[in-house]
Image (cartoon, rainbow, N blue to C red; front, side):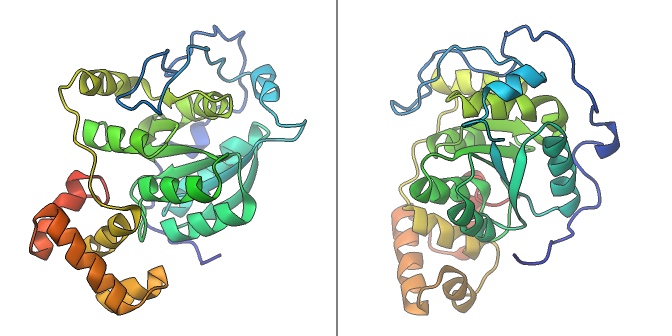
Length: 276
C-alpha cells in the first residue's frame, strides 16, 4: 500500500466527539433509508425495510456467517481514514483495507473482496464514482457507500447510476455511517436526509442529467486529463500505451463535442469526476 497522503489537517467530523456508546431501542423508522421507489433507473429499486441505527443488536443481525462485516476505506485525507476506522472498529466492524487514492482502492477491493466499500467522492487518480464502477465489475457483492460534501443532483444521480448504495454527507458521518452500512448490507439504499429532496426532484424531471456517453475507461482518462496528468503519466497509471490514451482522448472530445482541455475540465467538474 502506498504511504498515506496527509492532505487536510481537519476531519469532516470531530474525532474526539464520536459517541463511545450507543443506546436506545431503535425506532425502525430508517432515518435516511429510502422507501420503495424506482430511482430514475430500472436497475435501481429500493425497498421499504427500516434501519435500526446504532444498536449492538442491529449490528449483530447483519454479520455474515457470524463474522464481522469487512469494510474497505478510501479517502485521501489520513485523519479522515483514522477517524472512520476508529468509529467502525469500536462498533465491531473489521477494516480490511485503507486506500489514499482511487486506483489503490480498486486494487485493495480486488484483493480483499470487502462486504462494504466506504469511498470518498473526490479522490486523486480515480474518483469515488469511478472506483465504485470498477469494484462492482470485479466484486459485485461489495456494497459501495460514497462520502461527499456535495448535495447537487449531478453528483447524487451519477453516483446512484454507478451502483452506489449509500450517499453520505461528510458533515453527517458520525450520525449516518453506521445506519448506512446496516442498510446497504441488508440490500437497501441509504441517503443522508439532506439528499432525499434532491433525488425526488430529479426523478420528477427537475434536475436529471442525461447519462454520460463516455465509457468507464474514457471517464478515467477524462478525470486524469482534468487533474493535469500528461499523456505519459496517464498511460503509466492505467497500464496502457500513450497511443491508447491519445485515442481515448480523441474519442472523448468527439463524443462530447469539446475540443480543448479547459472544456474537458469544465465537463469533468459538472459530472463530479473532479472537484471545482
